[in-house]
Length: 496
Ligand code: NAD
Image (cartoon, rainbow, N blue to C red):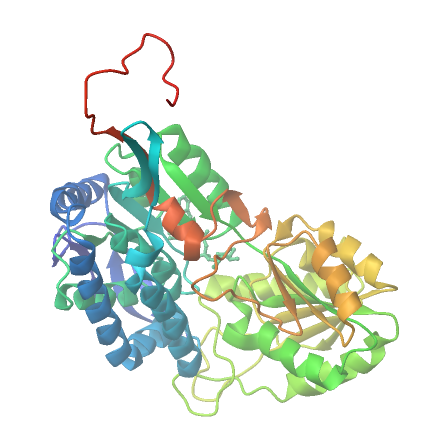
């Protein structure tokens, strides 16, 4: 069985006989490799390497850093297909979607190529006689990223391009379900001229994560994953003195108003709910139909959901691949069953789907559930699968109140032709990322990505200006170049 290793100090490594975890191909249901599970010794080796590398990288000029970033950008772009194939084979999403994920990650690399512009500080001339003051930001040192299975390239790329461009060194702990993309990215960094030790990958699970959280040599931790783990990460890493940003789970609602173009809304809802088999933190999992929009909408949704082609992500013409594991499939199937038992109507049922040639794959078909109520398990839990729940409310105000009562606040959208209604929605909804006739409002790299409430523990959003802020700390210099020796005082310094 092939072993997927760590990447520490510029080379592959794993301790012979160390614990491993199986890596499946979700389309076939077969185990294709095993991934090494890093111990505290592996984490420490990565921290030692990253600490040594920081001595040089943290002092390197902006032009040297951007040269490496531009080269990395070209290499990822040239190898995007290979990266996408690795993602599809371990995650299950269709190839075109995997390519889209690489593209969204590349956009953060492109933003980081402009780091000299965003790191420019501020200068005040002559704040006192012969005194100038200026402020700028310095890197933190060794920082770490812990990432989820659903975007094995894009989510790490929300983090490390900016961290590295800002002069930090980085340790990535990818998801153990789809760990291979991280290693291709590591090799591309090396090819781009990044010194060994600036980017390291330690594979692993919860024990590896805890070794990262406790390590005194790591200054900051970025996390993306489920909310309960985000809380754990935040509590444990802040307890050991680290700066932490921890993005959690989601339950994203799209409101459809009666004045919306229902055909347009439905087409976009279907793509947003079932793209990547619903395994996106910005997937729409709840359609909130207002007033008489509901009946027309549900009929179009049903027809469109039935037309989705489900199959292996490697095959042409496939819209939706499998979910990531057998356990994920079982959990999703159970939640659909609970909705049925609790009184909802299953309009399209994805349980029991068979994909010819892939009978052992982890497939759940598109599922549309009407009449969902807030008390039902399928609404209370993050399904993270190809299930779209339809909720019916009377008014826009009711829709906003319904969304605001949910503990999550990652993404949301409204479908309408009314600017006034859209504005009411934008201003009233307690969610971090809002779309107007855009169901998956993932911000571009030069804005920051982040939810509210249980979707973000901590305060910094990712990439864009907040990403730069997270991976740097401010320094303010007050400098005097005196003409004479006057001006000393025992009083609090004031300008003269
Ligand atoms: P997860 O929380 O199970 O795992 C995320 C990471 O944490 C992985 O690297 C995993 O190895 C590690 N981990 C798992 N259990 C741990 C434990 N007990 N202690 C320490 N570390 C642990 O999430 P997942 O299943 O990989 O990804 C899906 C989740 O991620 C969903 O909840 C989804 O909404 C969320 N997500 C959120 C965003 C966002 O931007 N808010 C983006 C992508 C995914």
